[in-house]
Length: 249
Image (tube, rainbow, N blue to C red):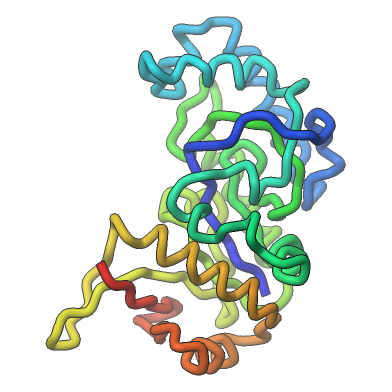
């Protein structure tokens, strides 16, 4: 089972790991793209106004320039600890017991715009790059979509995709019955459902925490749905290869 997460714009500083080492990241075939994008970002950081424009940085975000400038020599920490924000706060990675953390390291992939598909335990530095960033002479979709899609197609077992549409475009799911995209919805008193935006990240984070705590490597969607029902999690089939998670606004 693979659980695909989007990254977060916000990240913790620091870390106790050695500087970026591409060989320490999962999916070595992605290393050439990773190296190109890191080199491009570091090069662009020599022109602070150009980098600020490309990354859409405001006046209070100029520390991001230094993050980029020192990408290759900054300390690292596991990706699941690096990212912050509503989704990652709901996972409460620091509170996971060793078994749940081991499950996350094996089964959770985070889709970084800079590093592609990385494992939850992969050591990464703080950085700034979003799925919609436009680098000079580069298309992130052109760099990532095909090769990330091949990685996912060659994986085995159930794929549960919690990414936003922007990140899903950087690595489309395989056309297979084992790949499912998660939508977070609200349900009114008449059973009508609508997509949620503000609360969807917390709902996703809580689901990931529950999956890691349970530690079950679900072989197929039926097994996942059976577990959800037994755990009191309102997860159901939607249309096509979509699952719907009902959250309370």
